[in-house]
Length: 169
Image (cartoon, rainbow, N blue to C red; front, side, top):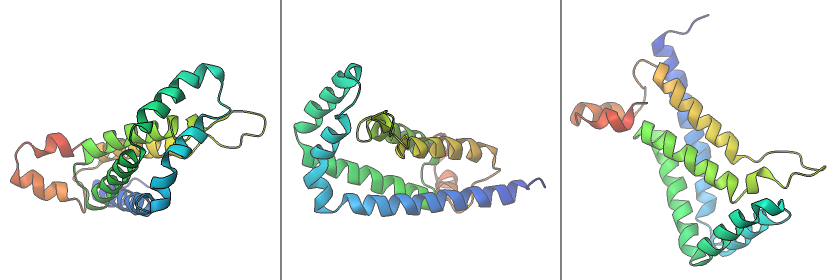
């Protein structure tokens, strides 16, 4: 059965909101002191047992984030909180989907060590790569929908003529 554009818009909104709630739970953990206190250790652990040719990548991030790991931990919490709220309320969807996909790829390639190490016992590729795929899927699905449902972007688009450039995929 083919879904009408209205039903499709609702289903996309439900998916967006549920995904936003998941990000909100994840973001809430980032605000705990345990995350901030172990931030650099987690980054360093991701670089362990990686192939030698990836050492420069992990060395760069270790040095870069090592300048002020607490600041970067707080920035991570802020970014994840923004993503959660933007998804839940349907705010700046185009910019959010694309920026969040890039952010997810950064998490995957740094904090999750590309989902590695890749050895005989490796069982998954990491979660953040899946988040990036969901963001790209939301972007594509939102393009198919007629008008977004349950999104602040609808209101802002009526108030600010250029808002759809930021909001609509």
